[in-house]
Length: 85
Image (cartoon, rainbow, N blue to C red):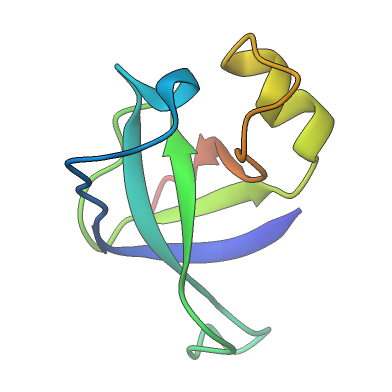
């Protein structure tokens, strides 16, 4: 699980069919001091997270593919929850 912050939306005119209908957000991993760490990544949003909200992101690709109901989907990460302030 990754502690991250939403930094943008991912928009694609062409994408894997398994991702149709899913909101994809660009997330930035945060370190223990809540500073940006590493490269931003895309995650499926199941909770309606908003810009700049802090979230928990799962890196369980098997579960991500289960969410989109496709064992061959490129989905690897999904937001598991929004962190209340």
